[in-house]
Amino acid sequence: MTTLLEQFLVPVDRFSFSDTQFKQLEATCLAQKEATEYHKITSYSSIAMSEKGFVMQRFRFTKPALRKYCQELCKKLYPLIITLLEDDTNQNSTALVVDLLNRVAAARGKKLMNWSFIVDTRKMAIIGLVSPRYYSVSNTELLRHVSEYMSKDVALGFHDGTLHHRRMSMRFLTGKPVFTLPVRASVVEPYFAGFYFANSETGDCAIHACQTLVRGMTKGAATSMAKDDSGWLPHVKTKSFVQKLFELIDSTRIRPEKIRLVRAQLLRMKETRLGFTPENHQRLFDKFLVKLQAGGLTADVARSLMTRAVVEGSYAFEKLRPQDAVKVAATKRTFYDLFTAMTLESRRLPPVDREVVEGLAYRLLDGKFLFS
Image (cartoon, rainbow, N blue to C red; front, side):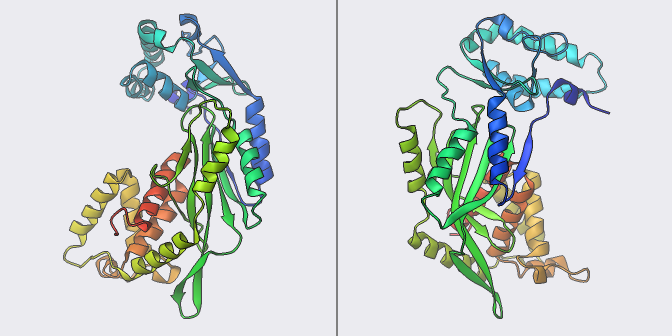
């Protein structure tokens, strides 16, 4: 049985692509581009919603587009709309939502004149809202330029990609490890370095290029998402867009001296324990939760990754057995285990949330968060 929220909104696209599926990523981005139209807002009739929730008599919102629309009209509007749509016990919820949106649009809609709805004609869905200054860079266009740049460096290859709504992210990595870390005896763990790219066709973010580091054993990553560590190119029209993009990529390439510092930091993290004792276990665990949430993680994600760090460690042979005591095992856990938990936890999250966790892992690695 579908909920009222699911009936009112169009579901967003979600795709993942492995290292052998670059052509599939290209084809999916091209199909999305060909189905994209811009509908300029010229009057109240451009934004008025029918009693069944259609705009311009034929389009429904996706959830990200509804959020953007509400935030531009009134910042506190969106939480109220979602609360009403999640109330399946009230048969009048749809009518209340439509009436509320239309009242606010009538009162404040002038600020959206000459803005444009971005529409997916295949799904008959409004997928975005952008201002007149917005310069569209399609994911197809970014893929083409990035491929051109990467073709000049045979050491780099496509690693993975995602499309969530119209937000694309992808990684290009070195084919050979940039360094290894000792595990035990003669076993070593390889690390790979490269670029992480992100772009949105719906005005959600600027074009992003930054450094990424990937663990060979787990595929978990740390990515330099912070604006002081990476590069951003806004969606504003410029004559030298491609040149600026290539300069952006050049500026975020990981240099050899950085690789040496990263490896040294990881080795220090392996040797530095988190500080748990059987006596302080809960108190320190809660303290880490507070620190992680201050770093941008949700309470659920923070608790999940801390539990993972304590229970699983960094390698299969470190995972707790049924007879092991959690408080005793925690005394052996290191900052490397926390780093590992971050990179693994991020893999189960949608792209925007994943970037937050990967970014925090990079800050931990870079000595800018918790471990200096």
